[in-house]
Image (cartoon, rainbow, N blue to C red):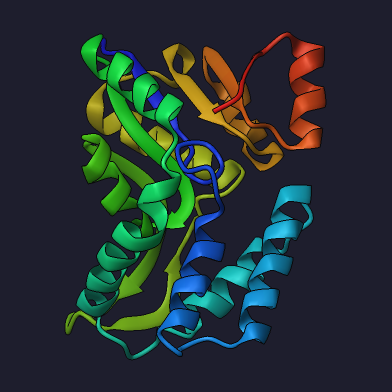
Length: 217
């Protein structure tokens, strides 16, 4: 049975919150206001504290895409990644991914972000698998304005990762997971080796109590 190395994206493989970077990109294009940027920063703060109503926020975000073409967002995220995300990709994260690939481990990014935001990073790092929040798309390739349950968040992240494990033949009980966030506690508890990277205050305390490895990337 193969071993797996699972990596969170925001503040782990990427040192910044990608949602904040995306609204910054939208502002450069004249598609978002200062108020939009402040709203996203507020959501990021709530996420960090683990007090966000994630389904409400996800519903608002994907609702704004209703009627737009999936391919447009894919192209937009490729350009956004090159311009604003790539400079913040962690060098330590690159080394960790490379080490697991050289050992022959299954490597995946597991994130609450969408696959449109995640695949550019995965391709850049040579990662073949992503576990993400999924947006519903109709037969015409247009967003319906709905997400597909479960969201890749909390227990939903565990459920979606178990699906990948079933498809690829690895066990979560033998996997390693790297994350910064207390919201990822369910998946950190499900794996063999939880690695805490750039932890938020609550996760730092949990890691100290449980003797988990803590790294600064």
